[in-house]
Length: 308
Image (cartoon, rainbow, N blue to C red; front, side, top):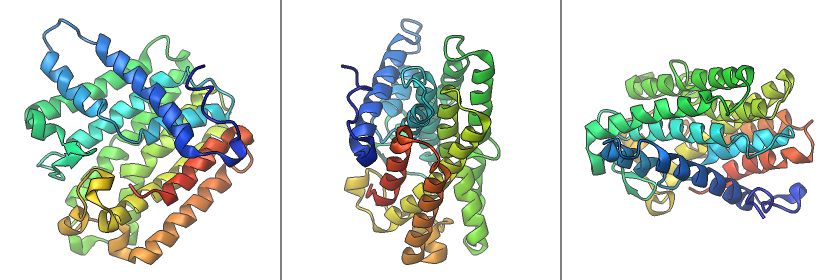
């Protein structure tokens, strides 16, 4: 029995942890096999080690799991979406490696262990991130990943979510905004670009790989945007209230750096209410989909309930 077939028996009352564990295992196995066969014997062992340290170092794999759930929600095959899910995790890993650098967030702890630059040095950490970007697009553009039109649509979706007006742009706002410039609109824009857009693209890319029509892809994009906003709000809350030993990264750093966060603008009670509001909007976006979309709904509920 494959991990895919062993995930759940009752989708109407789905345990997202069990579903996510099974899909995460698929992604982890795919990534490990991919990295094992890349550039062996070509003299790039140290760079490959730095890439693998962060890429294969655990984590929730929330974005690739969401891509798989999006594919399955529209009747697609979870095995066929794995290259896209793996590429999404590579790009997410890039953001973690680079965001942790001293020139950005200057964090020492990620996923319960030292950040990449603390182990390999800043130069190799930067190169590891750069290399993972190109590896992601090698996967996305491989002839056997998807038919050309589908592959181009997926690449377009993901590139927009990670570039100037996406993840990179959001990080620039996060870095360059002075504390006295922070307001609700800027905080929302930063969260949209830095986090929500890529989560939306993950769900939409999964739907594209599953052969969904444009209206359904748009519905999953709306779902992902709202889940992404809630995800970042909860992250902001955990940075105030969380336990570093449990969540696997530093806490209190956002307030110390004067960053644009929902608790800073709204306080904790209102931040929790806004996160719940986004989850309601996410669930409404996929209300018309059938039982196969229950993993998406469970993912939304997981976001609002998580404590790490």
